[in-house]
Image (tube, rainbow, N blue to C red):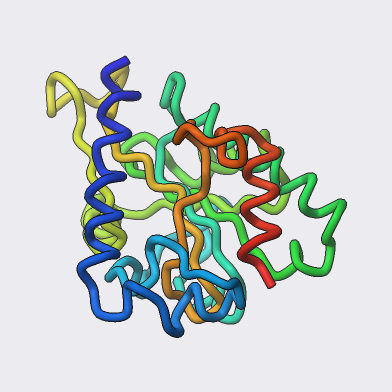
Length: 217
């Protein structure tokens, strides 16, 4: 329960961050590229930036490698007991339906899982993990310094619970950050994996599908 509660802390902060940045009320950027009648809540936020990590096959991976594609990015860790697998199941189930109803649009989207626990999440561990959700889901990890830099650039908060020197059997409290970025690498909106209180965005796979239909053009 501590993880679930702490995962929600970042969401009001992200919304405020987006509103405070120039262009947050509309214009071009991630939301402008989507072509929708209104901008996503993250348009104008300073979230994202180039990085060099390694993928689940141990190959170098950069943010720039996905230029020209929409990017659905989720930060978590493979040993997460509840929040991460539930969120990823909803996201990728929604994406599967999106592939069926709009295959050309789905081909423009790259789902990405980035570990916030590089100490345990080796490429081999991540490879088995992402394969359980969808064959298109890419898993990324790196050194502790690399992950800390990515967390900073992507406005992600996480911390090891309990003994900071523990090397196994520990939990990591982390913010819930299911981001959608546009083909230009700029943030658009938060993917609806939780229940904000409206029937259209109820945190179900159907809500994720509807979200993708709205924003991926």
